[in-house]
Image 1 (tube, rainbow, N blue to C red):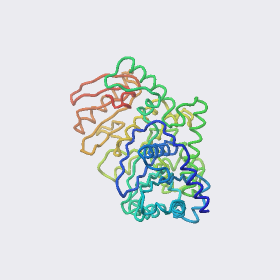
Image 2 (image 1 turned 60 degrees about the vertical axis):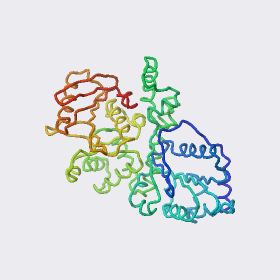
Image 3 (image 1 turned 45 degrees about the vertical axis):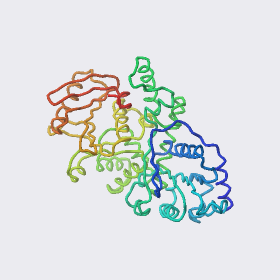
Image 4 (image 1 turned 45 degrees about the horizontal axis):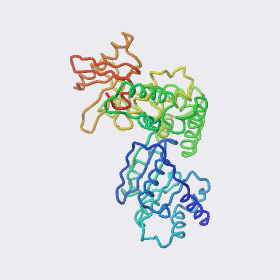
Length: 433
């Protein structure tokens, strides 16, 4: 088995590194800390690590000083029995003179599939001269348990599918500081494409029928590999039905009680505790995100239902019937994902009179941003409802600036509290409002 490991190590050193589109995530490497890049499957983590390797080699790092292993490689399954230590042993059998003399750069792709990986990484960080980069598709890599196991020797970063800005980079469309009419037209055309194809790198350049099939395969793989297989689920069909229910009703509210009742109506006899675990596992895979109500009371937060969003709006479009999911829900989903790239504390808001605002973001300096999402404000009833709800929330939260994101419309509305900016989605996605 050691000989096979040596062959794989050498093989990976000879592979030409794929660079691809430069991502906007700027990972900072700290001494004596493993760098962890987390995100949903197929969002570009492995390519991003290849970009880091490519820059290293350009900066003079010898390919022989790089140990790169992808644990999706079924040839490495035997490491479940022998332990991950065999990997570092095989490397130093190839290059014994480098041990404790030269820095080794280790790239471990999807290492979380191995139990005890944290102790392995912590040990080699402690005993070898090395720099370690890890990818994984589990949000648990951010957990305090893992931080404890690694004794503070890690720093985690999140990666998402392409943002709209990254998509424009891929298409070669530049974003000028002061947009000309031509530049704006190119960006708006790029947005129309991005709105349809989404941000998964593999799907942005293929035709619609094939894109739908790939998205559906992503869903199947995430549910099976990252949830059913990883957690040894005893009711796999229930997980599948739960995932589809959340996708069909994206951006809508669900309580654990309602989800449990729905699954029971399909014949799945599950406890509320187990359904709650299933939802957590979907979130752990960076597939579904729950948003709770903005309230200081933990008990109140638990009593209220959550709104659920998906990692990619186009994936929702490809995997649902479209009967319950409309373009307004998809727009709200895309706004949420854009916010989630930058913020952790995102909630929905309910005014004292019961009116709802889609998002309230709490910043580190304790300031807040209130955001309403509406496909269009052309209907007078819709316009009045959205403006009044946002104005009430601004008054209650003492916020002088509110935002309504629409598909196409743009204007500014002053009220007794402050000002509400109505912006088209493409501007919001580029933070140009």
